[in-house]
Length: 293
View 1 (tube, rainbow, N blue to C red):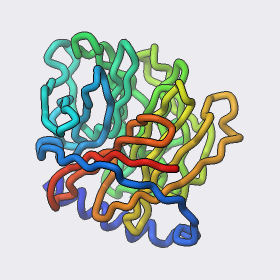
View 2: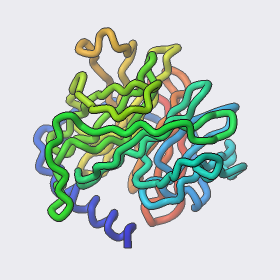
View 3: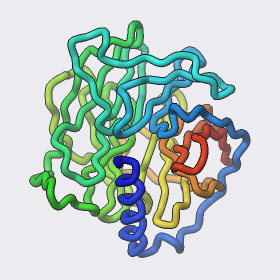
View 4: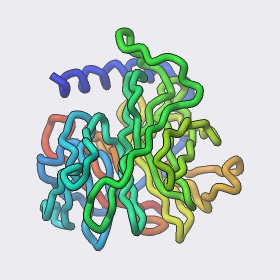
């Protein structure tokens, strides 16, 4: 039932987004697909991507078990860990949308909010040494006043499917169905207290952001997104840092994939990236290596 509701929701979303102006007149650069890897159906809704010790880590999104899956370059599952079994925290996968990590912690964004009515948005902190839960950061949007459950809003800006680490902060980018912008929010990663999110900057990406990654060594922010026609995009912010957010311009590339739903990205270098796509109910999930010039 949940999957049927999800498919129905995306059909409605495409209809709503198609009324946005200017979307089809954009000029894009083109990305190139270098490699494709079939992933197991157990991660058919792969929604985040991280790499640790040369092993990929992913998870399914809403309605799935609270499990991290580990797989290799052949797309083979090498391990899986159900979170919460080593701690008193009771963990659910309400709508897991992205994952990022540093040396000490894995951070999971339980921030999916398709209908704009969730009051339990959170970031889950997982220790990298034993995968125990070390805290939960509850978050809310400072300017959100209503959480209507009976008449959900399809066009709103209180959904987020992207998080990454930058300096000492967790950054979250919104999936804004109102005007196809994205807002950047910053979260104190050391605190387990509830935090009210306030937009630091808005970017006119003219698409819906579904995943992101930041590489501090090359100061590159990479995002994936889509538009109402189902076109998939790679968006790159070069020399990205918190000191000059208002000065940032970006490059936008069309990814030559059809009937895909790209949900996650991991930077390899300045020009090369891993991305994953859900199976969309028509086959298998995939991981692709893509490149740009």
